[in-house]
Length: 267
Image 1 (tube, helix red, strand yellow):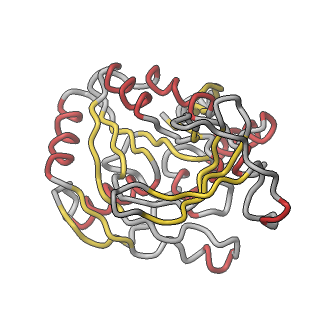
Image 2 (cartoon, rainbow, N blue to C red):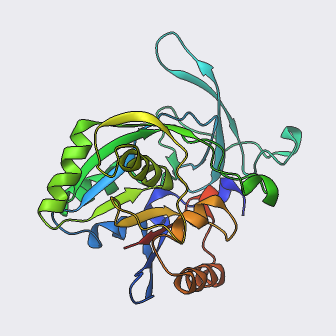
Image 3 (tube, rainbow, N blue to C red):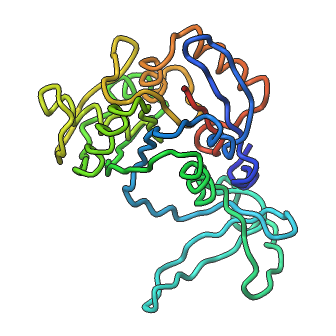
């Protein structure tokens, strides 16, 4: 399935894996609020990224692509609209985009929308952030991928350190949103001599099946395939047998891989 046919936020699927029992449950990303408890800490990566292309849908459901052309002096952006399809097709072969009215809304599929984050807060979760400059995660070449990830820069602020300590003191869990958050928190702890402290630095930490995470208890991430560095990190949070079953189930049920927005939570 190509990016232009990826689901919108409201229907992005979420596969819940209980690492203790191996139980699987199908849901949607908006169901994440039912999996957190009051006092849990949800940590996100606030590193800025700027995609040049956004897969979306018009109000009537027709697919389109919004491709950024450049920034304007007034803070707005100019963009070009394309019809359904993606970069693999020649531009001249793409259908025309649907006609849009002025100020018409376009729905873009983002894994964690503002509404999902508000729902997490409403469920009693605390939100904190780290900054992690994610590098190359996969090339498709097994020899190169075996050396990934390379060293990456992170910044764990004091407010997040205090939030982790408060969650721990109150019996709450730390849920990382994305593998980069795991690397930042676990890397900062390792650099701190076994203690999580506010720290800015570079981490080359490699997390896998033999790693016992010391800061992060649960992980929300995309659906990663065996052999990818991100899948290796997942092995620190669930047994191989459970992860294999989860991937097989996701394949049978038509889940989209992480590039296209469906997600998995191990908690």
